[in-house]
Image 1 (spheres, one colour):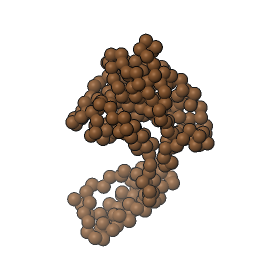
Image 2 (cartoon, helix red, strand yellow):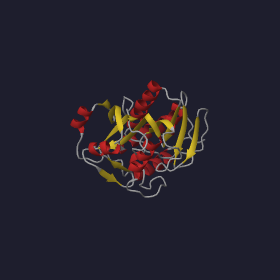
Image 3 (cartoon, helix red, strand yellow):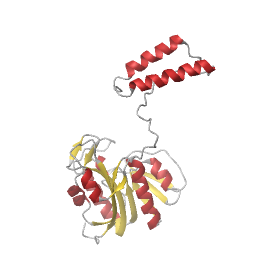
Length: 261
C-alpha cells in the first residue's frame, strides 16, 4: 500500500490524459474527479494501492440507466411466470438472465460456446442453434434474448451463414410442440441493415417473415431509457440511424401442425 505524493499525482494525470483521447467531452471531468480523490486521500492519510486508469466516463446520472437488456429480461421472465412451463430451453441468452430464471423454473441452457457454471435448476448443452438436438415437437418453451441477430456472422465462433437466423427459427419451430412458446428479441430499425460482424438490424416486415408459423401473443419494443413501447409508439421513434436502433421482443405461440414445417 502506498500514499499519494505530488510526483505520483502528476504522473497519473499524465497517464490519464494520454489515455483519454476518446473522451473529449467527459475527459476533463474524469481528470478533475481523480485529482480531487487523490488529493483528499493524501490529506486524510488514506493509503491506496497501485493506481491504474479505467476511464469510466458518462455514468454521472442521478437516475440508474434503464438498459435494453434489463427490459428484455423483465419481459421474458414475466412471460415465463405467467405460463409456468415445466422446463425452459434457452438458446444463447445472457448468463445473468439464466441464473435468475433458473431460481423459479428448470432451465436447459443451449449455447454454441462451452459454459463452466453450475447451479441447481440449470444445466447446459453445447449445440449449434441451426441444428437443435431434439425430436420434432419435443419441447414446450424456448427463450432466446439478443441471439438471433448474431447467428451466422461468425462473432461467437459459429460458421458464416447468411440464413443462420432463419435456420434457427425454423429449427425452433420444428422442435416446439403445437401451442409451444417462443420468446426472442432482435434489434429493429426503420430499414434492415447488416452491422458486420456485430449483428443484423431487422425491419418490421423482416420480423413478420422471420416468425411465419407463429402467432404473436404479446410484443413490445424497447428503447433504452424509455421502457416497453407499443408498435404505434415505436413507429414515431424510428429513424434511419443504424446506431439508434430499438429492440423488438415477442412472446409467440406455435400454430403449425406437424408436417407443415
